[in-house]
Image: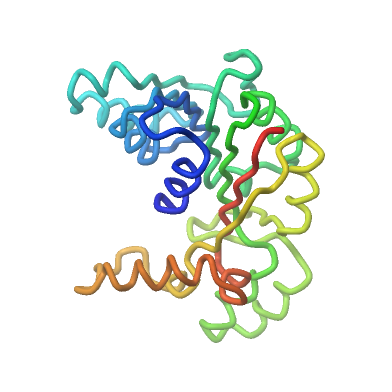
Length: 233
């Protein structure tokens, strides 16, 4: 996903430009820190106090120049208008968040308002058109059959969450003024791997396969996750 994001940034903005990045629901700050290290000015917004503490601890171990380029705010991603002015960012990330939001449209509209003209909105969502894949490959036939007619599912943490369909998000992005520019699949072949599985010796080949599948039909359409990139008009 990081490679996909970098591809979109390089293709949209001049090389060397320091971008203003907002990472909504940044978790432990993996992407936010990566982009700060690349020279961008990054703001991370996260409501989970434990994740905020982890991110701050990681940031504290970075060189001073990187620490100065990144700030962390504890808050709800649905309240971006409280913290920032419209058009304040060139790139807005919202990765792995929508599945926990019952009504995502207001959140998405708020994120689009944060973008400057031509800005990039990057979303990572659970693929609602492929919910039967994981239980089907695991031999859970009843679970696979039930998954065809719903966008609700239980994640690996045992939480009841929701998925999004590409068609619906495409319509939503168009309606909020950040129409879909391109999309990728994420975890096409590796979704059933155990969370604690060791990385294979040929991990670079694995990543190359996943990256290729994530941009190739029909494979990307059955990925566990979808990475959507919208552009503010």
